[in-house]
Image 1: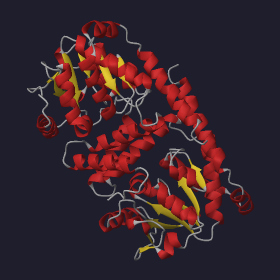
Image 2 (image 1 turned 180 degrees about the vertical axis):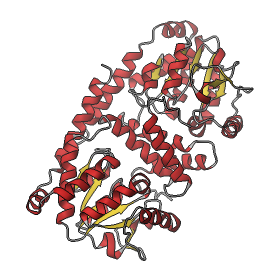
Image 3 (image 1 turned 135 degrees about the vertical axis):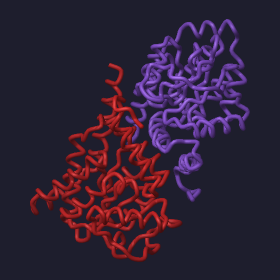
Image 4 (image 1 turned 90 degrees about the horizontal axis):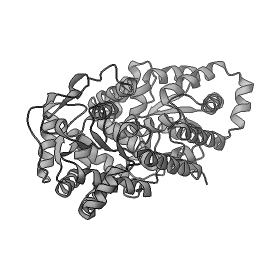
Length: 243
Length: 243
């Protein structure tokens, strides 16, 4: 039990929730470590949505709205943290949702699918095939889902898979708190923000952006600006840290 | 299974090892998240021992050598990552070793004690009592261990407990990759380095420092310099990140 007077109470509560999800087999144990990594970078942007991240979220909404076949790829961490938000984003963007895991097991895929459905997500299902240019099981995806997609929103993605998707000519939007990660640097658009803050923003923009405005935004993504802004923000936090 | 050609193979392997330790009940699930947090900061110092961290490790050795009753406080993460290194440091420093956990259970304390003994650590044992000025079980420690210590090396410590130990007048050395954490900022001496790199360095210095030199070093700890140097290094990494 975390005492409520602990200064990091909220953060510790999220950790406890994720630990329960791991115990239930939703989250991989490695996913817990990955979450911690994100936490640290969130700390360095002040645990709030930066102005430039909000612009990236608006651009993400535009890309999803202008896509022919938008897909949201969901892993264990995303499902554990934000199943409800995924449902709302799906409604607003009309994207397909595919469960796609780094530490893939049939059992975990099934559990995550059940959790998402419970929150009202329509989940793409079927037999995954080795369709991505990657070794091992990480090549697996659905023909009707990620393989057919032109725009993929894939929060908290592995760097290798992000690069493979890009090589296939897909537009990849990622949500990644580490602006230096291979994922952040190889995606078409990187949102440097915490998942549960980012998703509702994208959903709001999906509901409010007009068609013309969306087309205009989707045509001009300044990916490097978003990464640079995040680095500048982190340096600011480090500079004033010991004041 | 992590493919060996993955660019983050080593980091992912450590995560897998820790996941196994968590499954065995050595590490708490929350400890996995805490590890990830450290990973992020290690990334920002280039995943190597900084010059200033090496100086801090030398100072830590001096403090341990000059102590009347040095104690090393070991938690699940430390045991999982570095049980063998703790044994060697104990030999070189003659410190007592106490198992002291944030997410404390009798079972986990027992498992960690067994693991440490298996690696040749002499572990302080007995009935823990509420001797620290903290709420809940986190007040528990051994009368003959942490309570009686004048110098405590406590890697990866919680901020509250670090402050409580300082209030009791103890010299607290911590190993913490986050120079901004409450632990890092309230310890007497903070080593901003990764645990498995830091411990062997301290052990080496314990074996090579002369008595006079150790006394001189122990008398003049420039704690703030160590923290500032780490922040400067992190800013450098962020500045050159997109080059």
